[in-house]
Image (tube, rainbow, N blue to C red; front, side, top):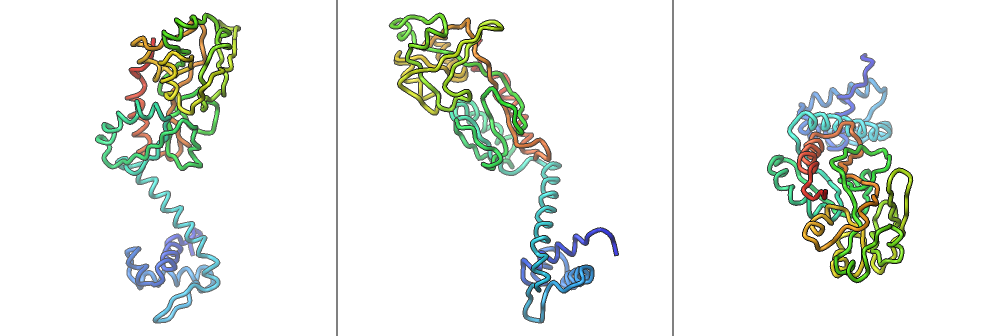
Length: 304
């Protein structure tokens, strides 16, 4: 008798228990009924006990069989997962990708490039989840995410696609009415709008040179969970806000907003492609990553 487990007989045992008959199991696994019967007999001899009570009309697990069935089912599921991953890794990218992305960035810059990706990979489907909240990739069942942040250390695998700066901005009408701030401390008495999902909470950090740092807690009458929601109040000249450049860029370019205190800098973040793990990553995920690197690494919204 081989020292290796009899994987075939265990798999046949699990399939017979699932189908409730030798004939149905034989059809499912592509064997003859006598071959299935021999597998079960071989397993029973090897394990030293009957796994089924059977006659010409009925088939039922014995107590011994019931004690083994969950282990056999788990073995089959694990084997199917291994084979499925191997096939997917070695074949054409296919299947569903659950992708999370920030709301505004997803609407403005991810959704418009999806048609080309879907044309290039007709066997891949995308389930795109847009939210400014940082989703739990593992707990939420996501395959990948785009994140815009100063990314902290974590167990996730992250590839930086590009740099993302932030700007303190106001409309020309606000500046005309209230004056142009020249130092971060000038913002402390200003009406500064807040972004609820800001990674470093409601504190703006400014630096100039290597040793000088100033923090400002924005105090304003509007706080929103999406930075784009701040735009109407900003454009009306009623407040100051911090915006990422992928939102601010077009308004800075056409003059509807102006960048304030440009000599002071905030720590730059980045756009990251994040996955739960790099091990056994399906080819569909690598295909999406490579496409996003190609299309998003040199974005048109970056402001000089």
